[in-house]
Image 1: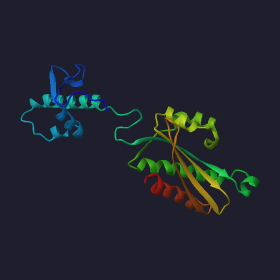
Image 2 (image 1 turned 90 degrees about the vertical axis):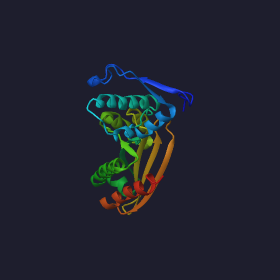
Image 3 (image 1 turned 135 degrees about the vertical axis):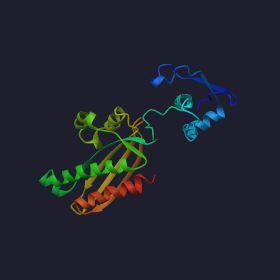
Image 4 (image 1 turned 60 degrees about the vertical axis):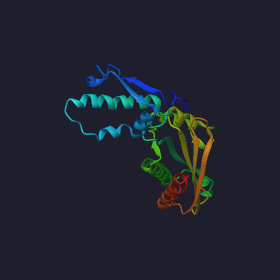
Length: 230
């Protein structure tokens, strides 16, 4: 990280005059040592929140000081592009696709029940990610046309990464259910860096039985035991 100042240097900050509720009016300058400033940023000014105010007259100055702390912290430690305030990773989690190599698929074509299962596990996958402490799931609605135009992600030469990047996501996740037969299937999840396109993780789970329950259990197992454990 770029050094802001020498360790013994004092930091001087003045609030903008156009802050709402007159918080910037006649605020003067606030001075912090580097050590105190780092402590206040680490605690986000909460150390001040527990102090009792002696009178109502103290409140404007107290509030202005808290705002000064936040201004300094925002300038000194800005969030990286694509990151959310709580530190979660922004992820574009795309719908699962079916790769049917079974004889049944070749003869009968698309199966409505399997298409419904794909939609169900795609929803389940995003819900599991959103419920975790690690990921912030971005909304795919603004890029539905691009997703439809891409066709199958497994053969689109990185279009999932481009779409994810356009949404401000940090990672792109795609999933494929490979059907060998109604007895033997496997579920695969691919995680790519949305900036570089590098493949970060690949995980796979074999499932037995072509049912709603087996598909759901396969996705749940991968998220709990592979994706969130790394």
